[in-house]
Length: 561
Image 1 (spheres, helix red, strand yellow):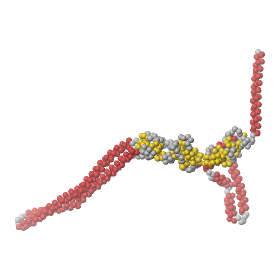
Image 2: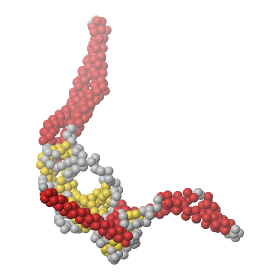
Image 3: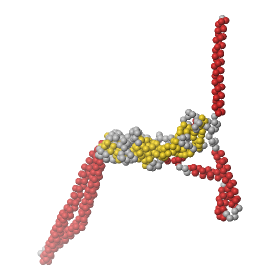
Image 4: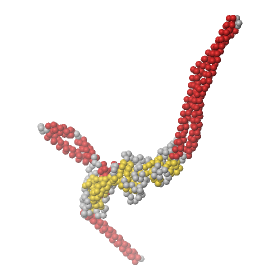
């Protein structure tokens, strides 16, 4: 029992000694770390720089500078021969269905069939129109016969019926005259016999009555002749002439109707022929599909699609006049002008590079659909100066518009420039490895490099991560807006004192003349203004001067921050 307790006590003492040794070593290491850190802290350069050896730096040098606006666009032909649907709308039909279409990209010759539209409805209308034309032909023949009959009736009456009636009346008059002559002779003879007593008075009265009756018959025949000649003939001629004119009008109407029916028949024949759309010249087929993000206006050329009148269906591009249309963000559209050079790279052909030139910059933004963002984009058209057989409409291309270029500029990476209180700084590493901040003046930038106009020299090494040194390097204090106004106010106050002294000196001069008097008035007006107003005017003048700088340079400087 005693031996066992002794062994246990020895074991515990050994463990305690090992634990104490470990704690002592850890404490010594902590003390050493504190001493080393304090020595490093007290020995580092204060407010001048920081030692950096493993940071990423860039060596400044002079090289060619190129500022490009890079956008993607689609290749199209600047001179397209558009093939449109010539089938016109009629009645309630305003669209026609595509039955067959040639493959896109196929090479065609002039006169080759491109698209066939459904013409069944037109063919039915053509059949019905043929029946209308036949009926119009029959109506025309009837009108011609009626006119001929009316003209024959006129001739029949004037040259036949009237002459016949006139002859009959003349015969009646001749007979009546003969009867009168005989009645007169009988009455004369009867009077002689009555004087001799051979005839009675009653017979004499009978002969007198016979003479009177013969004269009445003669007058009747003469009156009948006058009525026929002066009234009946004129009336009949008017009636026959009216019938002729009516027949002529009916004939003209029948002719007009037949002409209209024939035109309508020809219209349907032309429309049926137009349902077969053929190539107006040699070329390669490009579908005129429309995709605008709106279901009502989208169009895909395929069998079953509806085609409206005058709708463009196919384009036959001119491969000698190609262009690329790309949308440029509104923040960069002011950088682009006409006649700017450009470089074009086709996505379909790796390594291909074409030359281009900006020929049009739209003044108004491109309309977007309801799902697009609120950022406006403007269409820029770039003409391909050296088209090849590889380029074709519909290809996607990357367009680099060369906004600005220089054969030699001092440049720094845009991420190496840090903005502080409206000024720009770079963090430079000297030969001893210490990093210090230096104020620089910048120019244009191309989203990768910014032009340094002042503050750096070739061979300087600038930090690529300037924000990593902000805790160790002090930059100039940032002046608050109130401090800036106070400094400006002090400057204006000092200027007032100087102006007042000048005014006093000028007023004591008796020989200053009109010029001195004018200066006094101007100085007086200036001194009457409150100091705050003069400060505001000075700030406005400074702002206007800053705004007069080139927009491209301002925008380029902002892009490099």
